[in-house]
Image 1 (cartoon, one colour):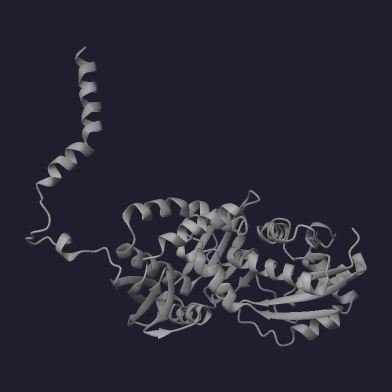
Image 2 (cartoon, rainbow, N blue to C red):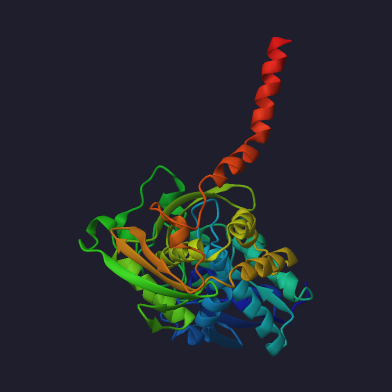
Amino acid sequence: MDVKKVVLAYSGGLDTSIILKWLIETYRCEVVAFAADLGQGEDLSGIEEKALQTGAVKARVEDLKEEFVRDFVFPAFRANVIYEGQYLLGTSIARPLIAKKQVEIAREEGADAVSHGATGKGNDQVRFELTYMALNPSLKVIAPWREWNLKSRQALLDFAQRHGIPVPVTKEKPYSCDANLLHISYEGGILEDPWNEPDPSMFTLTVDPEKAPDRPETIEIDFERGDPVAVNGERLSPAALLARLNEIGGRHGVGRADVVESRFVGMKSRGVYETPGGTILRIAHRAMESITMDREVMFLRDSLIPQYAKLIYNGFWYAPERVALQSLIDTSQQTVSGTVRVKVYKGHCMVTGRKSDQSLYDPDMATFEEDNVYEQSDATGFIRLQGLRLRIQSLIRERRKKS
């Protein structure tokens, strides 16, 4: 493949540093290293210099935190997205944004190719490359893990040594992790045995629920059209709001999940996740919907959650069916405005109140006390009509027994 310039999704770690040098060596091309700041909590100040020293012709670090939360996390959470009942898709939601920015940088820098560090066994390769195809199918795609013969960590270390690539002198973690403002994930290594309990020292965003404060903390979250806009009365930008909820949820041990999930490529894998702010948001958002959404609209939207989550998990963020679903979801959120009160305590998040100017809840209708707005006798005909088909089936069975 004839390649002149590549935009590499670059983290500055061992793998992508080696990929940078390998691209130059293998394709005799120029490499633009691109690092995305998604709120992963890493110091990115020296990443440009490191990329240039490794051979990149240019290095760019882009602050994407606000765009990530506003245009990717919030739209997904308006749908109450969750994959296989447990995973809040922290990694899956981030990949299309990174790939989108790669495509934009390729256009700005005159590059004819893009590259990523995802392995040939995982989901990320699909998420990156489906985005490339959706946004600029003319770009060439280089996936080193599917091409090179560096099949072990030792082979990577040997390559780094031969090419003078600095390798941090740190103890190797017995798992791999990926972080952004929505979550942090852990997988591989000792976690590959689904019977092994995660080491308590592994967690970084949340305290052990058993060691969380003995007093609960109450939070009020304001929503407008399905999006959170304020915490305890303070309006915050999307990224700042999620960071605030991460901080609160984290100190109370909220948002841990140990999941065995179905990868798109066909195998099962185990992931351990910390999503403190996202967990609080999903619970609060559902509570807001409970008093502001029409019942049938909610049932319809809820029936679409598994499909919507699968589309994101499998990398189809920019597919027309995901965009169409988003339009329906956003229409359903027009009245989802108001305030939800939740209490966080030792790993749990409990709704304790909700209010809204758009509320469909009518105390006069719902009361168990005497009222003048609901004729209870009307329920007789309602129930008879609902049970008509059941009565018919039973009568037919009885006739057949007698015949």
